[in-house]
Image 1 (cartoon, rainbow, N blue to C red):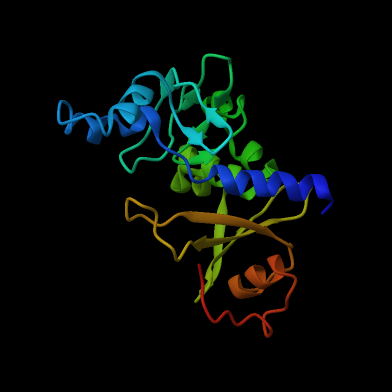
Image 2: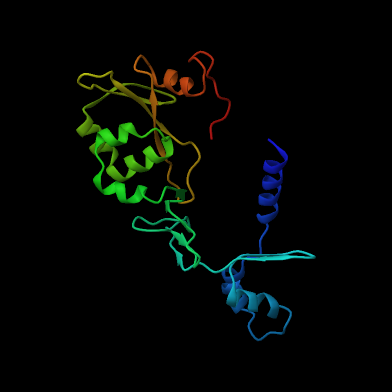
Length: 215
């Protein structure tokens, strides 16, 4: 990485340590009227969002005009931006994962062919989650080909085209709400086992793929 990229990474690291502004209001309210030591923080919380006070400069962020979260506190909205600011900046997210602006509108018209065509594994997972795994398997005519410690291997026969083979894997690290994400990994048509498919995604063969720890 060049100097410009290194400088950007350093700036991002510095901005991780923010004062929460408006988001500090809940605990600041508990000390309302108990002296002026927190008066400055309270005043900023009343008028601004995140902010970063340094010795010679202060960075202040406007408060959002839209903020939508799920029960686990993750950014989440299915019909618009999950986070939006007055200047037009917006972030679209589904259960904590950022998605393109037009992606959510497309969820209402999904079919198995569109899901299979999506190359981004994270977006494909969202599509499958919204569409329903059982429905997808039923309408795709998928057949389970085997199961091992890494996941389940599924095969979808297509007329006039090579079979679609996918490995169903479950993330070993639970989400904040205690659930575990299911992912579908597209693998080569000749894949014979789930382990072989997962190994292929790491550029390995099944014999070489022996993870000491899964995350």
